[in-house]
Length: 357
Length: 246
Image (cartoon, rainbow over all chains, first blue to last red; front, side, top):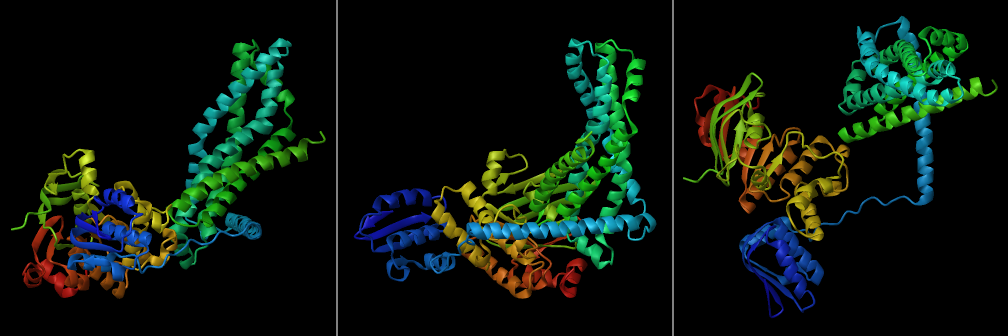
């Protein structure tokens, strides 16, 4: 490239490989008087070359009709690849602050309304589904129960055991100082039954089953499977959600019981090995300290945790936007929201049952 | 005789125990539009994906730009790939990025062009496929046909030497399909592109094909010009041109 009497002269190739260097050279001449661009000697040009020429014209504020001199080949390429005639399309303007607040409030109200509709739908069809199995695939409850319950048992057992060991070990270190070794049994029994068992199980289920429910339904939504079910006159909630709802309702008390017992067993191991308590004394103490009320509250709240996981998973699944990207997003949102609501419900439960005790 | 730009010799492709391509040898010549035909599931897409090493060939040799790609190192193969554009059957746009950003990927990754030049190139490419209005939209907001056109814009972003299209016209209306063919021919002439197309659209084949490769049950049963294909006595090819579309 060189400047010849106010004309920018190019020769050889003007392609994506040569343009970056030519651009650097052009920037050296940008302040000089240039009125035409000579492309007669250009032997090869591609869309990058044309875009570069357009950019030069723009920067020099030249009109292509008056200032370009081209051979036949360049002319054809220029006619195809020039962006001079194209209108620029700007991105949608961002909403102002108040509009944003208004818009998010409306969206919030809509999502609450949709959530309530969904809860009503799921509750209604789950209740009806107990007596009337139409609209459900045969064996789907068992299949879901295997996935939600049996497959999760291993990880829940392992984590409960570890949690039991940790709780007992840390409290034992304190209790020992006061010679109050036996109270490790009280602590383990009450904490595992009323709090740790249900919440640990719920959080694992939220991560495991909540994510799978959200992603499964979202994928079905994205790939039009939900629409296909509707077109076959099958209620998607009945077909997809109700079996999961029933399965988790069957599994949650069993999983919570397993988690609680294994957690207490972890405490027993520490009590026997570290605190010199006998197993019989520990077990007697556990049963002495526990009340039926604690057990019912522990198991009772776990049902609400389970239902909230299914409802939130389904809500996010049905409300997916976009393609594969959307599925990933709603899955994450579903897990975070499930864990959040499980903890909020747990707090509400504590306030109701333990505030004035 | 021109030197082939892609040369495949004795290619065998398997999925597990299933042999999909049985000893295929083909040559694809520069600046021609080669159309690969065959019934559904006969191995057309598998052939393309084996040539491009998206699937590892079981045995055989594949040469692109005279380089053996089955044993090439990654860096060299990346250089080859940057000279090839591929339009996938379903578009394969990255869902998390806008159409603009999708087309920008190859330009930003493989060139040192300035931001302004890249922006202009993207606008032009999207205009060529009539998608200027969708430049800031997300792939999920587009219809199937629009997504395919956006994918074509991405495939030609770098003005590749070879453009491979897997069923470009499927799902498009006849007018868009015809304008797409026109665009493909224009690109071929303008940029001396070599074009390989898998398609079933007879109208499209008549418009653009220079050469026809016909695959049946994993074997290449016909290799010749469009006129030869129309006159051939090979029953499968004859039926195809008589019946219309598979």
